Length: 243
Image (tube, rainbow, N blue to C red; front, side, top):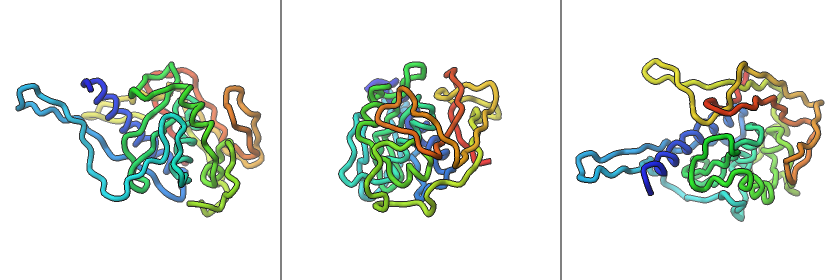
């Protein structure tokens, strides 16, 4: 692989790590994370090879889904709900899949994105990847807790990891631009939603929405996660915070 491929893979994994932090703010029964990844150049060697490096994680390594609709036989709740959550919270512009790792410490993900967003990784299938995920995804008790539109709801919601509550408490969700500081200077992530102002939306149990036109195999629920999302995509990232 060339240098650009290594850079894309590392960048994608660090973006997934940011998304995991936002997912954890919803207080799911199990927190998720991605291993930090780095690029190292061996400058003292003749060809100055570049290595993609991450910390070794020991334990029972498992692949939970892939970038083309595969779901593992045991179909764990947390990884599947995380993938679904990224799709809904991003307003159907991004889906993080190819979830694998030890426990809920993941590595080597793939991000499907719409054409207007930068493409990371050779496995980015765009809207086709969205479709393949939605064809095989079955919503579980964590999807319901997160107030996601339910897709092919599991018959047995009591199986696997379950939240203490049926749905997450009513709370404001804020979509805002995330800035990190490098040497004291703010810098933006390349994969993010550009917004002229913060948009706040409340989750109210009595609200309902109509099914969206381009959302295959899904339907509205009486207490959905309703987000107003900006439409211009450039150098910001979708984030949710509990106010």
